[in-house]
Image (cartoon, rainbow, N blue to C red; front, side, top):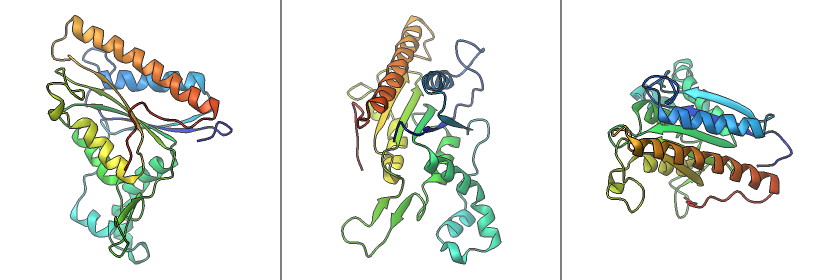
Length: 242
């Protein structure tokens, strides 16, 4: 990612709650965090381009038998119906492939990601588009196709507490793995995660967690921006690789 040209951000929200916590009754914590991130980023880098995708309000179509048949059919052999069934996936993958930075608001629902976000993942993990596969290839038969250097930011919220690595509920946290594993598979191997906890308790602990998360978002925006402006490699404190 180069400072010389504007960057492209893809902002994905997935909460079923339409509003922002702290502003709207029963508003979403993840929408609050993702909006804060993007607003602060845009204030610092106003020329960057932001594409917004609200899968919570407009869920992508789930993968179907016809989708699978079309996706695994060689592109030059697809008929009009197959091109049509992949049209939504084509748009979603194009948005992702164009982005330098992916910011996802992902609340924890029953320990995992919301169903619309899972549908989005299923639509963008595409053989021949975002990952390659060849049975005859020596070693690992699959490889990521996204351009290197893209970054992933996950902004999440949990009803309980103790879901971070080493915490008592860490093994039940399927949100981060449900995003980082498939996204690393296609090339988004470096990620940062900020979380709100204690939502079910709705007490001072929740308020403190929100304040800490907002401070973490602000620091993350500044760190990523600073890395870009320094011209150095953007490295997460918790880097993972595929």
